[in-house]
Amino acid sequence: MNSRSKVTLPVALLMTILVVGLVYAIFVRPNFHRIAGGEIKFDATYVARLNTDLGETVSRMGDFLYVASEEGLTKYNQQGESIWNKSYHIDELLFIVEEPFITVVNLTGKTAYIFNENGSTAEINTDYAIVGGYLNAKGYLCLVLENDQENYIYLYNSLGETIVKRLTMFREDGYPIDVAMSEDGARMMTSHLDVSQHMIESNITFLDFSTTGKEFEDRIVGHQSISETMASELIFLDDTHGGVIGDNQLRFFEINPTPSLLNTVEVAAIIEHVVQSGDQLVVSYGNATLPEGDAIANSVIVYSAKGVVEEQFRYDDPVTGLYGEK
Image 1 (spheres, one colour):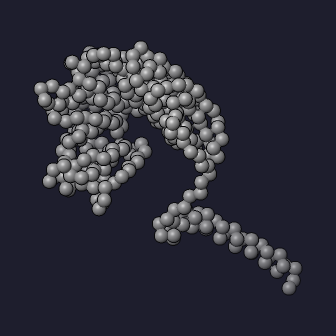
Image 2 (tube, one colour; image 1 turned 120 degrees about the vertical axis):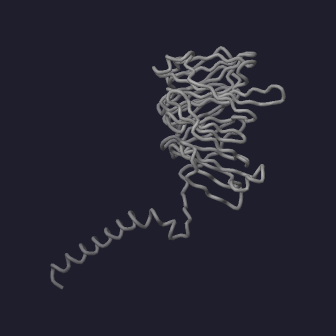
Image 3 (spheres, helix red, strand yellow; image 1 turned 180 degrees about the horizontal axis):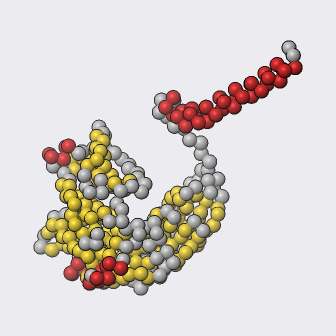
């Protein structure tokens, strides 16, 4: 064997190994679960036990874990190493993550905190007890406060500065149930429940905090009353489209700047889970509550921002969990 062939053989072998390695890395490894019968195996990088006595709960933002408890918030990397922590004391924890912001709210108390990946950006102290908190991806935090027969809705920016405050009266507006904000912070929906004369009615209020909203009294651009329905959840699908989730119906609105009803979906099955995926609303249904509900029982249905059914997935058993990302 001459010297040229002695050099060529190792080079050819090395090139073969490189090609096989590239094929494996690009094509085989990402799709190995298909070869293995659909199974995906994960290796744990960090294992820890949450302290339930302190009400610890965990959420992910980016490549980091955030563990909140009644005594503080800690940021960890994937190896379980602490990056930073903020100590506080609260009695009833409400922990919300809307990347790139996090909020910790003391329900029934008077304090709330806003964080980003670098730590605390604001500490908020209120005059009245907090009964609800809502955060969006721009760092706007909405707090619902209660004082006897009065309720206050306060909107703060990520620095804790008060942007808007609104007073509602229990005897006039009903009890506050939910609040939703558009991602740009320009629009808001509120839901109040009025129970009188053995009937229930949900009152939906639409507000506009942009320059356009200045033309309307108290920035209220519209109302919608829904009889015999408890509107328990509100959600913005984009900056101008919102959904109202009731116990027996869904309503889809366009708010620009006043609200217009696009579609009403009567629901004859138990609503188990509701999530947002892009500008779509995804709902999983459980058992039928009326005979006509058999058509959607144990289904997951995807609705467009206009309330049109885009996909339906039917299952033999109830769906026990549903997760979506914006």
